[in-house]
Image 1 (cartoon, helix red, strand yellow):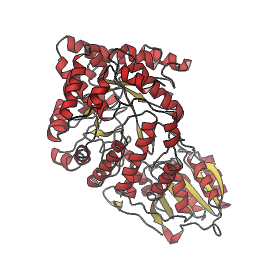
Image 2: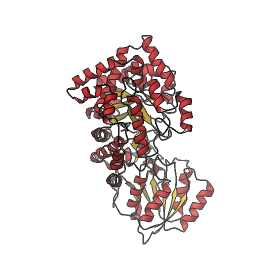
Image 3: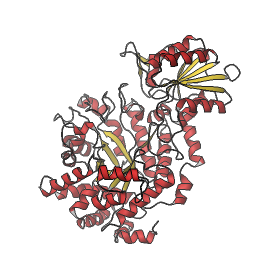
Image 4: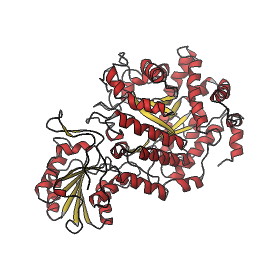
Length: 594
């Protein structure tokens, strides 16, 4: 890794002037001076955040070289930076960026070195989606926390702040300086296919408090927090990855519901806000997605909410932003709307050249680009990247996945597990009367970097607590043969723990659970994603919600089942009746204890 002296030299004197401190206005003067020396292609590059394949900036595996050549026209991250001078890189596990903490740190250092080695070289904003819960790009041995809805069930702003502080410290130690978290959507639609448990809940004020707390935690650890998805993705039954959602809220309802957490984020000094690829006719009746809407980005977010930080698009590869315009028009229209960072276009070459052409043709002014470049450089300066762009191996060892951090995650998880039903005091299970436990149910693909599968994690945790636990994975769509096998095994057990995953009315999971209950063996169900499952299974004698199937939440659920800790979570969303959705079965705030 280059020495700090080398880094300072690489920034061509910019570091020294920025490190001198002074007012924000003085910093702006220095940053504007830097911008004035940049070429137009360099300015365009600063506005892009892109994926790149590989575990190394200079020596990725051949499969990643091939993927880079196919999608980006370069072999490596270093070549990408040299060609396009991008201002940001986003890490994904599927792009092989996140094998382990030391590798992540090495990749981050390699990216910074490659960028700083360029003429007028600048540090890079390195981002990822580390929401925790079901969306996490960097897994074990990094510390993984309960996700947003679990934290909503816990209801503790202090815990949300702690999650941000610790997660931020670990990300920063690995060279990741921007996190696309927290999710500020208010999830009021149980059918929401893309947000759900990624949201803190359905109460806008509760969500706002947790969003602000997590922002404070992340940014106190010198990682830019990013509230998403503006102007709110919580009330849709369409996934913007695959379709074009429409939010039908009135302007008044939007102000009282969706806007509340974003206002709180702005008040908390959030570094970045991510736009949503959805249509909100009450805010803009043009039919354009919010990402491309000048009335929404500039009029509402910048004007009404008074936000002057970085605005980043959601991925430009998503269907919600590509249905109306071509990939060459989308980045130009986003910039005209008031966006600063263009995230992960499907073709960087098309998008980059389209912005360059728009400026040269006069559709975009260079002054407009300068506004966004200034916001991006302000963020890099505020994060201290001009002074300290590199991270150390020792820092990774000291911070990432430390014993203290892991213990804190366990304690926070224990405060989130929610007991929805407990007929005849079935829970907690006693080892004396229910020592032989059968663990069955859904085993969805394990979230990044967790042990999985969920049934195995639950069984292992119960064994550690003194139970005899047998595992039979039945999946999310058990066949009649699988159901019969589970029922036979249940008759020989003292109790059954069954994991459910987004159960619907015609779901074979429902058949499985109903037949398990019919055996007479006590059944404890655990909703491992959305807590709404309980409405489909009213006969289950005991029902818990863990809000995710990550290790930390499942282990906490096992401790609750065994009575090692009492359930303390309260529903952050309402559960409607399955037979009459107009009626609330369990309201916000419902939660039993021992």
